[in-house]
Image (cartoon, rainbow, N blue to C red; front, side, top):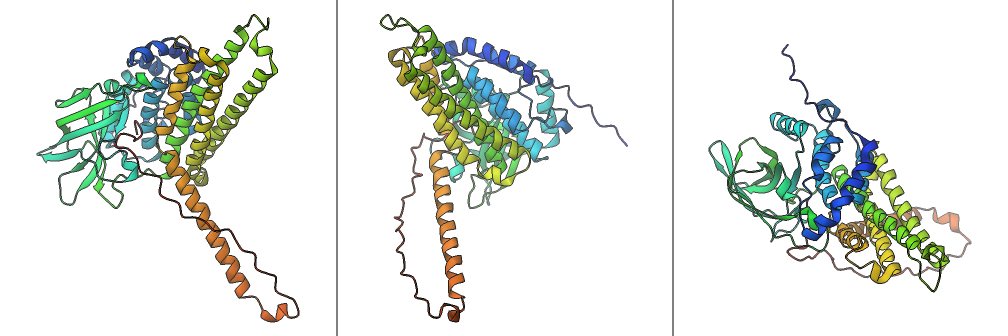
Length: 442
């Protein structure tokens, strides 16, 4: 029996280093935000602590971290530099998907990625959003096309909101073939491939350092086998993620933005201790009004953190119900994060909006939590429809039970007067969106 090749020596996962890593990222976050520059120096640090490969499966020589540990990592990185955290998240989600569903990657292709990951940072992201398509999660075929050319594919198209594009090792480009019938899949494009160009279009209010620029592909060659999930396009060619994949995305990114809100809370508490108005003669932190306001922020963030961590642990335990609830938790968590930072800004006035202070950056960054899949409108629409459907089912069951009752059993008893129920107005579908309002990254 032939011996198996040795597994790559990936760096060990050092969760104990998270506080130091957070502090290091925070030291240059303001500079990268100001210049909209990619935090390239962050990733060797993250690699050395094993944070970029935390979710590589044990069978591949990795730590096999689950969603709960991933949420812990992303919360810490989000508090330091959410742009670096978001790029890290996309890489962690890629490895986690392969850990959950073995064989998603061709073995030789994934082995090559792991070999690269053992030697240094190997950042990966899925490029799915396009100018006209928006996010494929909402359905539709991509305009990016893969044309068969001998033993390779040639990719042509444009992807927008391509988080971390300038630093990616591999770009998973969602594209359609020119065949009949059409197939769709993610084509693995390596950095530096001929015909691949990155246009610096990213000029955003928040997460400026993420460099979520446009990626332009002009007959970019991809080996014939370097494709993930290539299959005929169905009724939803965008291939919405399965519940567990959706849960990783929703809860992982919620943790990231709760990290941003936690950093804003920490700035606020320091400010209230340091700010001593002449008329008061004592720090603002001594006033009950500010103490109560900080208590509201602390309580909201505690609740949201607990929700994310609890549901993440349940997902790790294989609870499918928990995976289906992740979108609702994302809505609650991101609203808590945004609300906490908004309240901090309101409490500090001009100080909080001054560029020299980091609170204004945290405020701009936390607003980006709304654009990631699943977006609030999709989550709420689904939750509302499910609740209304359950109400109909419950009503039907009750009516059937009443109809089947023995009429003799009610002899001599007066029938109760019917109680009119409330009417439910029809609700328009809120999912219409601007051509460039699709979420970044995945």
